[in-house]
Image 1 (spheres, rainbow, N blue to C red):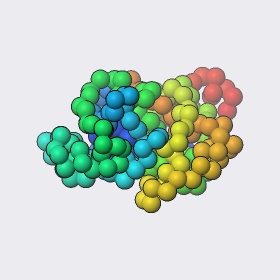
Image 2 (tube, rainbow, N blue to C red; image 1 turned 180 degrees about the vertical axis):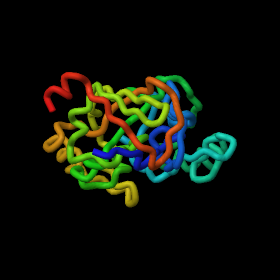
Image 3 (tube, rainbow, N blue to C red; image 1 turned 135 degrees about the vertical axis):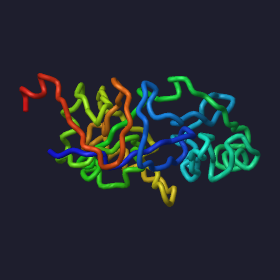
Amino acid sequence: MNLFVEQLWRYPVKTLAGERLETAELTENGIPGDRIVHVRGPEGVRTSRRQHHLLGLHGTLDPTGRPLIDGHAWDSQEALALVQAAAGDDAELVAFDGLARFDILPLLVATDGAVAEFGRDVRRLRPNIVIGGVEGLAERQWEGAQLRIGDAVVWLDSLRGRCPMTTVDPDTLERDPDVLKDIGRRFRGRIALNADVLRPGTVSVGDAVKLVLPVAAEIDA
């Protein structure tokens, strides 16, 4: 397989739609600016798993690294009004840069082969990196492998268990519960890979990727 970086994504506001990148720094804390603001209610963090209309809002960074929501500064009244309309009048926006802002690990890596098998928009999976040139469901053999992209080294820990966010159409916001059932049936509930950064570096769309499989996987192959 001739592997390459097909897409890069960042989600400045956790659970909102994100932004595509051409180049990204990979650090020990993932991509700078990723999920540095989140939505909270009295019960804790609110996400699109329940308040799915949050996926209709877009989080981006301005040139200074300040998070925006649909073009408004994240801490502005305009941004808050948009979030409360989607997630309830008691929702608020909170800045947070600790590692706990990630559900599991700082990166999620998807592959074009698995996305093609999935048969739906990759945005439903919310990856940070999409690897191109992958044959079918080869990613299912990648747990414990490394991806070497220039100077950066990414460790692939485990396949990601999927949640109801995958059921939401990223354009229409319509929900289809059969999507999650399909993931359970065809992918045993898991697609794309939780990942960590072993060695920081800069990566860009089009960069060549070297896959280093665990020894056991190489023998099985």
